[in-house]
Figure 1 (cartoon, rainbow, N blue to C red):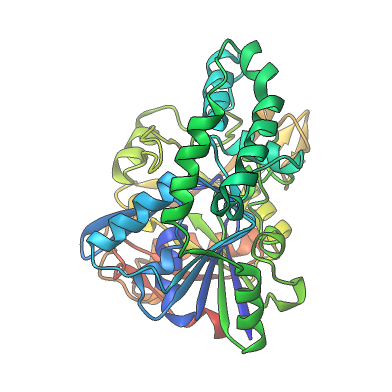
Figure 2: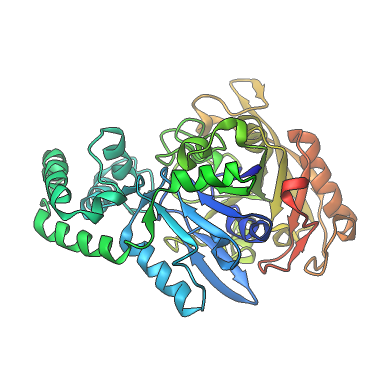
Length: 426
């Protein structure tokens, strides 16, 4: 068998959805292993846009089975909405989509707490207010509600009462009112019933794929610099977005993972608060935002844009053990006469090749200037068809981070891709 992990190599929004969609036809099983509806993977097929928040991007391929794994946190209403939206497009899901019974459930008061905290904080993280953090808090505190719990109303009610009791002082201290447990139980039992045909033993399904020598594609969410342990803490997500998180989140052993591919934009973006050393708060930053349509697929917020940060990317290569990088949105850089790339940080007179433990907000980026290009890349299907300056840009990335670049995306549509090949045998 072969298991390939797809991870975001920056601060999220790197274009993982498109890459998973491209790689899914080579896979037997696609597993989403972390995060929740705070992630949005945008697909463009035949000029038509589809945004998925929970269901793996591989669902568009009829021969591919998909799993939402135990490491995720699930808003059942969002999940049902996606299932129905796919059905309206003629995409079948019932026999091809399995939801782990072990995945934790995002409840109404999780979103309530998320919103209250963001509103009252003097140093807001800039969450999507989807309740992801509070849900993971419940998971770690061992009081969470799991998808399997939605299928049995009696224990669900008991667990909800205990869960709400734990949140009561927090919600009241934030100035909120505790929601009614009976209405939540009724609503979520109904959601569970509508999802009954999808909820099951995902761990066994992954194990069967391993035993049958299947090809497994493990799909991450967010990005390395948002990882709870390896990112710009505390401005991070609440789960392990790195490749190692795939083991716990999908229920697969580390010895079964054969490759790791990191997805990185040809520049850098970030949504929400937190340090961003290469951010461009000027006309160039706005040009990148406009050309790249850099507005959050989950929140619609304008993304912060900046030059490519090779220090952060070097860190991602190391902590994920990347075998290859896929570069997305290379076409967005077209028409810029020169390009800057951050090759190091300076902090207190020292030159750093990797992000510091803290005070990343105090670093000064060290830039090298590269030649730009003024060409339409959309017809390029191989790296050697790119303009010479674009080829040199990619070569510089490889040299600086010590990892080869494979696939290159040159436009939003599925077909706008150079050097696509079977990722399991690259």
